[in-house]
Length: 358
DNA sequence: AAGCCGGGGCA
DNA sequence: TGCCCAGGCTT
Image 1 (cartoon, protein in one colour):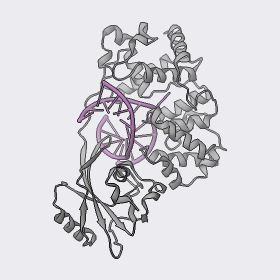
Image 2 (spheres, rainbow, N blue to C red):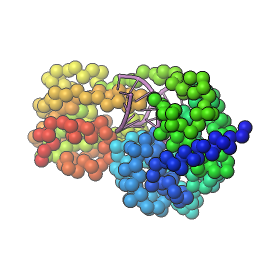
Image 3 (tube, rainbow, N blue to C red):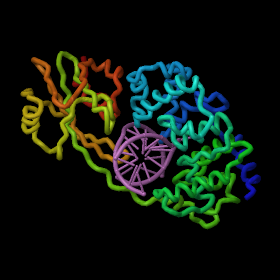
Image 4 (cartoon, rainbow, N blue to C red):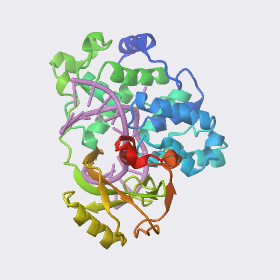
């Protein structure tokens, strides 16, 4: 197929409408690499402040490779998918120590790097080095599936392979970087999931879904599985104006992130005296509980976490909590020095100020 | 192939 | 409330 007219219209639209972003208009692979890791499953607007933070602390791959993991996690705190941060650091070390501080120019070698999958490989090699690899992210999947009226279930990997083939056939091999950025930008600004702005789309003459009037139901994804539920009592232990923070296990949900101690239960409907008995049984504590009076919840992609914050003022000896490893007593003003996850950040940002004053 | 892994914005 | 986002790793 000859897509020269399509390429021309797409590129003209992009040059006129592209957003100004700090990792654009450069062929320096480091900011491109950093932005691609930060933006995995993350909107540009959400990742942007983190990009500035990371560039400021780590202006080059050498300074990043020399960083401490806790520091990287603390800077990453709040962005989610924390293994991305750990893999970013691992990857930087490999690039510095095994690749002389350069990014490998082969697809095969790039794919071996931690946190670098098919998308990020194609993105870095095409955007920074103009290699002819089509990027296929959420935006491109949408644009391609509508352009070619692909109505198969995109939860199936066979559908994903079909999109990948089409994207590479459509790739403008004379200007891979320009083409890939334009495709993603079109998906982000025009060919949106809901209410796409077809009236402003430069590709309407080529869009099969528009001609078949199927734009609203493409791309098609079969319904996801139901979220599993978790219920936690969040026990805020206060002693001499300090609060106990504990580190989660090194594997699983929110691995290694810091939080208030929690008691996982089936239901959050116990009476206060019953919860006090639970504390006695599990943590050998006999203090009285102050109820926040609030039930909160936090939605993850595949989990619904319900939780109920409770305050416990400790008078005497500090307790030992079985099941937890590292723990630390901190004043509330110093919470930001540890990588906490957002569900528990919300607790002290939103709860009764008297709990955390002083 | 399917499940796991966060958080925020939008309708 | 449900869906999606410049995806990747593990089993």
